[in-house]
Amino acid sequence: MLPAFAKSYSTKRTKPNLSKIPLPQSAASFYNGFSPQMEIVESCESINRLNSYLKARKDEVSAGVPGRLLHVVIGQDVCDVGSLASTFMYAFYLNLVQENELFCTVPVINMKRADLNTRAELKWLLDSCQIDLSSLIFVDEIDLSYYDLFGSLKLVLINGHKLPTRQEALKDAVVETFNCRKGESVYPCVETVTVGEDCSCCTEVAENFALTSPQILAGQGFSRILLAGILLDTGNLTNTQCTSKDKYMATLLINGAGRFGCNGLYQILRYLMYDVSDLKVVDILRKDFKKWKTAGKQDNVASRSVLVSHIGMSSIGISIQQLLAHEDASILEIKYFQQLEKVRLLMIVSGYYDSEKNFKREILVSAESVELMRNLLTFLNSNASQLPLKVLHQSGLKEEMKAFEIDKFTSRKTIERLLEEFGGTSKTGGISLLRD
Image (cartoon, rainbow, N blue to C red; front, side, top):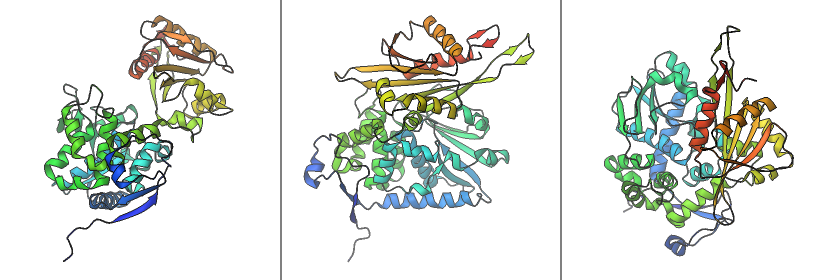
């Protein structure tokens, strides 16, 4: 008599080749063997169910969601492994437990589909877990404002209490926030608030599955998606923000690590995050890029409003010197990216470890004009206690492009806040310093 459920296995060539990654030894690799070119893939009933759900919902969206409300689960616009995983996994969870048949619950990945090509760690994870990429919906593939206009949009906001600035107009459609921080204000239309316990968002999602459908976590591909998010969010369960719940859930999901073990899975994802050897300079800058607008105050003398100014910030995991040496025309490519994104001021923030394992923070600033660069340098000099800068001499830089080393440990949030202050509150005679 055949069992009700039987596992099957197949082999496939790994993409990318993992032979360059120094993986730690693990019991799984000892017993199962390890080939950097080939991988044994286990069939996963949980993933099959997930893929069927994703395809059905995309088909329904393609048909215009007739007779139902579009119930969208969406995360922040900096889409890392944890945000990507928790977005479509929480949507799948809601689809399993919700009783309101009027809702068409759909995950929307808050990044452009084309940008996935610059995120090797995301592509590898989705491929290794056998997720059907064609069934995912990315934010540039759906017009959420159309559904909002006709009152048929309901939003579930993941891992935060506020929508990204470019989606702020949809705030009245937010009905649920998941894994926001205690004490954070929420939009007035929010009906359900799940306050996080300072743990990974993927931990919270995994706990929901464990309490309602624990058997679904047994599949290797399914558990790997959530485990990957937890490991990256917590620095392989070692950083100070890691909680006992994170460690418990990682243990519950350990089958997802497979032959790599937890340490090996973490090393693969980290390596792919910072491996830019196959990327163009423009793609390196786009990997972790955000921009925002600041409207100047009204000029009382001229009785007109100052034009909206644009600031952009790219975060990279290599040194400024490596970035400039990446291509023969790296400087021109940086300028091209700045024009492509229509930002008057581009700040490239570098964070990497040198040969002696010391963390280094550097910045490269590209301004639209020499005058704008002077205004920025004046502002930064006045805030030297927060951002002490040391000039990095790099050949080939023009006057509107400068490189600096930051003399003390400084978070990207601090740099971002100073840029926002420069663009939003630093005015001269009512005119923003961003306006030459």
